Amino acid sequence: MTNDRTARGTGFPEDFLWGCATSSYQIEGGANAGGRGRSIWDAFCREPGRVALGQSGDVACDSYRRWPEDVRLLAGLGVGAYRFSVAWPRVQPGGSGPANQAGLDYYSALVDALLAEGIEPWVTLYHWDLPLALGERGGWTDRDTAYRFADYAALMYDSLGDRVSHWTTLNEPWCSAFLGYEYGEHAPGLHDRRAALDAAHHLLLGHGLAVAAFRGSGLHGEIGLVINPATPRPATRREADVQAALRASVERTGLWLDPVYGRGYPEAYLAARGAAMPERPGDLELIASPIDFVGVNYYNEEAVVAAPPSAARPDGYSTAPTANARTEMGWDVAPQGLRRVLGFIAERWPVRALYVTENGAAYPDAEIRDGRARDVDRIEYYRGHISACADAIGDGAPLRGYFAWSLLDNFEWSHGYGKRFGLVSVDPMTMERRPKDSYYFYRDVIAGYME
Ligand code: FCB
Image (cartoon, rainbow, N blue to C red):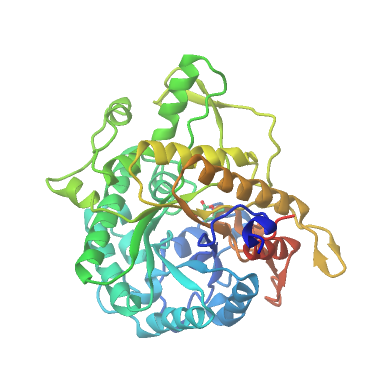
């Protein structure tokens, strides 16, 4: 008999996990349905000038009502897993106190439907939609938010833990802390470095408390953290650029993985800011509660050169142009960067398993021919990055799975609906879902065929 896998030729182990990812605020809509409370994103979207065209996730893809269609689309892809997030304000509207049964029921029904299709639910506990009540008390700058997060996590373990095998605590905490509190692009939209550092620590504390609560629950399953690391990519071989690239990678990588793997905070990073983290005795032990895997969200990579430290960039670097193609986000297409970042993490930190928890691309709407969106650019993006995953496995990285971002065109945060990452388009008026060519491409990859 021929080796089926070799004959098909994708080069991935049989047990490699293929999945697709979304997040609650980006797809659910139903902002006022079923007793959902408000989140910091509901408020942020209403502030003039924050989001393109003043858009919001009020309706999004209406997945709060149309989730059975989404599950059918996932089944048609043949994915082994679906990574979605729970909207904390849907299940605990005030961010503390009583649970909202209608919210719990929504996720419970989704989980059951996924399992009935043989699709493993991968639950993200926090993908940025913090309950507004907590936001109004300082959000992640308030230490108490970490404890509220752990309580909410325990609520979700109670509700779904008998059926969910994989959990992640936080999605891209760098975005929550720095885009939210220092660079002003995400809710709550502040420009305050001290607030960002406080937020970073409290996010990590919340993560550690939630991992500890999971271990204490006696449930089976795995739990991890999803980050959006930056690869140290020097623009030249000059030693100054090599060092600058390493420094540039810290805020998105070592700042999270060092404390999670018990090494404390990177000292040079804090020294460059003349700052300390607001840690209390015992915090670092909690933050280092052992995790089962690290999720890597990868979209692009930047070339870095040394530069004099400035107030905005105290680490002394800046980015340089490359010849790479760009997606509609203006992000470089650098598929081998995915291989590099997986290798970088596997070399430096004792990760048990890695998953690519997001990867994908926004492009302008493709030409429709024979009733299908011919999104050739997106297919090429996926082809390159999926091949890079095979290369990373060949290099020895413990990569166990890959999730495409995203199942649906959705609400792309401050860009509104204008930037579309979906394998499936969503008509903004009728909510009709239509698979693009990339959907069929990815289905074929999962089935073992990549032409
Ligand atoms: C990531 C986010 C995800 C999506 C993609 C494009 O940073 O986790 O929600 O917006 O970028």
